[in-house]
Length: 286
Image (tube, rainbow, N blue to C red; front, side, top):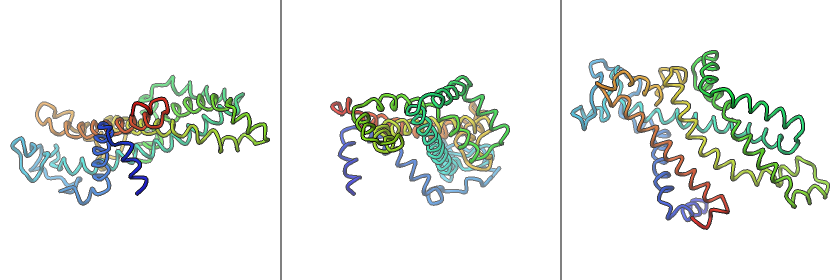
């Protein structure tokens, strides 16, 4: 309760953060309670109901947001699609963050050959277009939830590695680190006691903002047919299904697109608030 009260006291008055939290809470609740909230089976096909418009556009109240080209209920598929987006976003960010933080700290603290190898690896990866690399790997591994998380995690570590390396290079010259080194503390003890605690606020903000990027990346791969398996409801695959019906059944692509937009917007709003809260130079403006 104290943690919730503390967060509320810091967030109160920041309307952007409150709106973002409300939107993200709705998405999380939809993901957690999909079987209870979804009015229909998201995989059930009823060809006699195909391309029904939403209820407010003259459709049936049985399908509030209409149906797709196979008669599947769009509202149910959007609710279940929240599970995929959040799972991919969080898991890929965790994998990329842990890898990038580890390599960034090692590069900044040890320097020399380790620094050159890590930075050259990062330069090579940055020189390769993300979507081209992801498409090549997914074409070899095949579509699947695990493969999408693996690809996004492997390609996403670079930004963490570069930022953490820069922070580590600055922190290792601080007086308290020099004092710790003079007391005979080894590099790993210095990392544990001084480097890691000081880079975590930056890493948390970066991870929050990267979740939104990972959700968009997963939707892009699913849109191209190289993401999640076709039988699993995914916002990206729903966009792909609806692109051929934009002029005749606009709702098939519009509502999944709105779901992606609102989810990414909510995460970005919370990320901006975290950045302002954790950066001492900006605390006076909160």
